[in-house]
Length: 302
Image 1 (tube, one colour):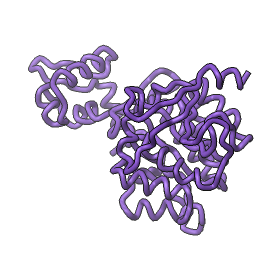
Image 2 (cartoon, rainbow, N blue to C red):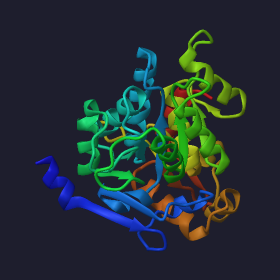
Image 3 (tube, one colour):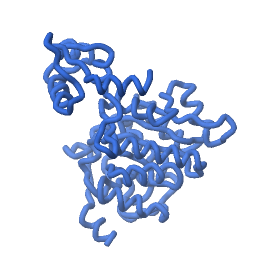
Image 4 (tube, helix red, strand yellow):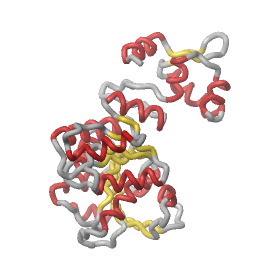
């Protein structure tokens, strides 16, 4: 059944074609061809790479699961390598939350490696994609994984590092993301843990620190303008537009100027939030959060 799915949903993308992911052009040497199984169009969607150590600690696995779940609930595509440890944990959590995932592998897209991640690969093929630079049937090779890491960083708008030693594939992914000007987030760890030396250094060098679920929600809200949709259907955090309105009721044209967006775009967003009962239009034309939303914001603190 798995092999039938692979045959039915396989694709090849060549550089210059409309379906070729535009983000890959940010690489110094974009790949000429990409092999994949699943839905090629998800490679164009807003995504976040969640990467970490293969020899993950229980803390790292739990943090990766938290990150994958929140990213999926925020409507982001979760991108990772499918390896043991943090990668697989993040992808499984995203898939369990109904999210879309992309696995970038260091072997042929039709080859599952490691076998312990078969469920992760099949989940991505069903809802998302498995992609590779390697030809069909290619076995895993050591040289392929550094190339794979660059693709993980390039295909994503931002990269979250969960756990990483100083010299590791995870750090090479972070370095690639930084070189392309991608946003970089990192989860801190114990100063005594070898798996957290790399993440702590990234934070020291300026990566956005993620210390809690709320931190990650806020990063996603501010950087993607996306609201996390909780299991009960409610939104747990406000995006850039709502954050601005919480600070001060504002007219649509002033808000557009402040956020660097077109008035039409802002009006569309405001209409959506108004229909959800999250904001109200005041008699003077300004928009303001509802009293309920303001109370929720106060409970979350600064």
